Length: 303
Image (cartoon, rainbow, N blue to C red; front, side, top):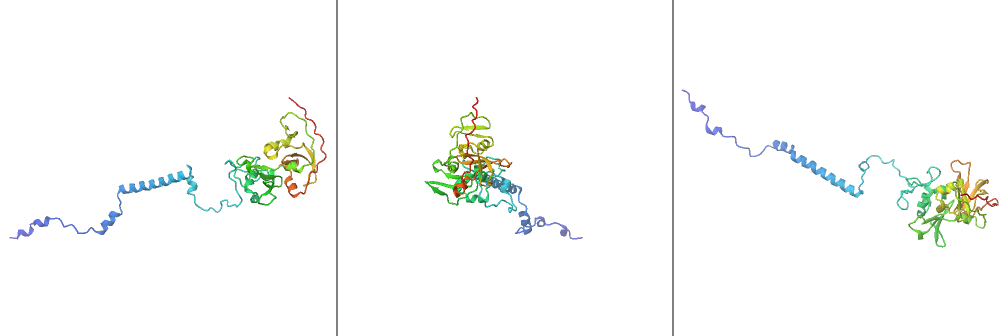
């Protein structure tokens, strides 16, 4: 008979194995590599909140307008405009410099961007905005007197080929702070121009009651489209014939307080040009060469 006690299960054999004193390192690393779902969502929400705060700060700093595409734009910027020429983005009153002409017929510094030619650095900063806004080289010509500004009788000014621009600080903040000098009057000093009899204004023909002279045709159109009395003043003569020093040929001209209009019918791009009165006065190298003016033909008064 065999000993059956050897086949019996002792009670202590049913007790569980004791817990190990330390958790295996492999299990800890596995738990660390798998964060809970709740923590992941919190991290995303926190990052999104930071981004929105930064965006809000940028929006406030930019005055309510952000170009994100430009803000985050990267890449080569070597092709950007790096010109050293002066730029005029705004003129007096905050508005962009606008051309009185079409911007493609010889004007400089009068387009919407306000880009100026290289020689603009030779123009006094106090005069540059006015020069550009009111026609640039075509109307006033290039600067011919050096900086700093000249001064006479308390008035500061600079000479240009076709004009003299003057500072009038007593009119600061108005459109009369810079004014063209009366070079037309000074250039023709001593000449007695016959006056025109009064006539009623009509399309293409206008009478100046102030100086008793008329303006018509291409001269009237140019005068009206490029600043009128503010830039050129009133007419001080009617149309005349004059031999111009540039080509020694006869041209139809008309003198205004601040300019001489010249008719160049063979120039399709610029049939009306302004005489070089600034050069003539500054360098004292020319004077009027007018055929003796006759009394203007009376214009009938119509109702």
